[in-house]
Image 1 (cartoon, chains in turn yellow, brown):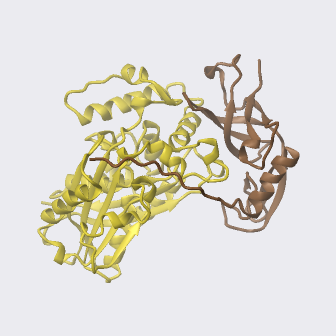
Image 2 (cartoon, chains in turn cyan, red; image 1 turned 45 degrees about the vertical axis):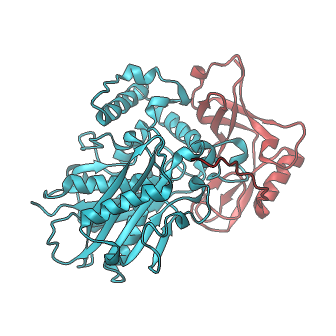
Image 3 (cartoon, chains in turn cyan, purple; image 1 turned 90 degrees about the vertical axis):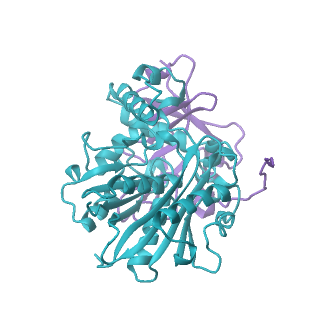
Length: 349
Length: 138
């Protein structure tokens, strides 16, 4: 690995809400100002910007034009990634490792309240064979969950228990039970409404910086990996996330991690449904003892594209000042087609 | 303030050489075409010009049976049911609509159940010329 370390110098998140009345640019402004303030820098210190957004969610082609000014990209190199924000962070880290830039701002946004999300996601499916049938991401998740549940009669109750735990972790005022989750309506069998992370509007910004001596003690990126599976559900084995297995193995090799099950203080996956936690643990080589989504993960509100970058920001804050490792995960596409992993290493107190 | 809009733009998606051949076979002969990769042996449906597993363009076209078995399914209230269907023994898997007769309960579905393709009476060279797969009645 390069001797040039990449550290998470600052983070800023707009907490997901069901409907944020501000414009996309205003939401991004809050996240960027917060990240720059956390890093103790301003726009003049940023060499390059990497944004993550998806046109169809914004109802706008070249969706980065909505945020060009507010991310400070005017007269600067800007790259837009149309995938999860964690991929944008990987791209930004590579820009720094290559020596091209020293300080890179990574920004992701999604305002899902603007249109029926699953209707939009039909447009992310194959236009000849799947769009006309009305297949969306939720349909694909239901097919994957059912495949895993077959022959496992305890799966639904176990998933309901996981969903209840995540929802209860988000709010002190909630104490849902498995039965509460199992009494919510079916959306795409066997997935019920309360097994699905609620959609939200959100933005997240992360400042990555080259650091040779890491004098600030910020967590550094010690491993990266991303991977894609085929688009068609029939062309892959939906019983596992093999893309995540390859992505995490690349990241573990780079970070020098031999035993992932005991490696991490904090694990922040982008799981929208409890069956995805099961897929995540198996593919990432983790077990039930992993410190997973302790603050509820995406059950606090799922803004696609933002999700992975927000996991990175949350994981980074969790190990700031401690001598421990964290894993952040992002996914995009139907049934976990795209997968990305970043490993962070704390610098100690 | 919110500006309300409904995005509606005419659009022409190209099915491509293989896709057109697949849709033509569906329309004219009620035949489902797939392919087997001569390099990695991956089987796929619908017919493609390249292997989704190894990227090879050396594929052998296959006529697939109109009967298969249920691999997975999902019921989406208000939107109908969808399924992954394996066409033939060790054949490729197709995602399509699942047609559940009134006599069959959702809870009675099991992996491996036999299903049969149901074709449209007025085909037009569209994926819906195959209307879905019907669960065999008890």
